[in-house]
Image 1 (cartoon, rainbow, N blue to C red):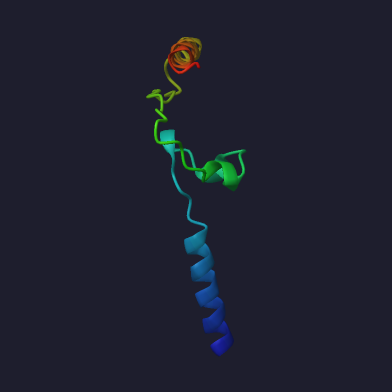
Image 2 (cartoon, helix red, strand yellow):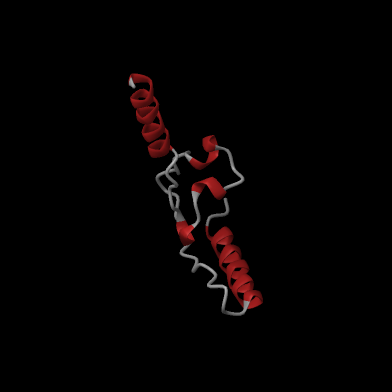
Length: 81
């Protein structure tokens, strides 16, 4: 009986550790192709995250990607050395 209780404790602990963390656009950090070293890295103090609207799946995808490209181009010019 003690073995079963110990196994239950371990399962609860493991399930707590494996709970998905949700990032932008509702994507799980488990969905990322990047390593944990990269996803857990802290951004520099002067880093400014672009406010990009998540693609809804309903709107025009090409237009969404064009807006993203334009925002990235402007952003990269602003912070170019």
